[in-house]
Image (cartoon, rainbow, N blue to C red; front, side, top):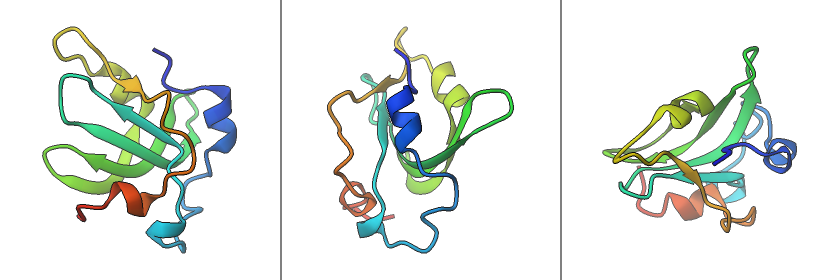
Length: 105
């Protein structure tokens, strides 16, 4: 599955653009997940790097829940039971960071 699309790229704010926004005002642009684990990545901003891959900032739910950076390359390299990371095709752009952080960090 293609993790980045032109539509997502067009909607993705550049890194640090949400720095002064609250979680309730920060939109989640893309949701990535692994179907055989509890890991989920919520991208709120990102930049295309010189090598063409994306560096994202967002919320990560995994062993710990935290805000941080992750790359498209990292996501594409994950394989568990033969399956890779998928993009939630039905997530939409109306969700906020506050919604996905409902358990807190």
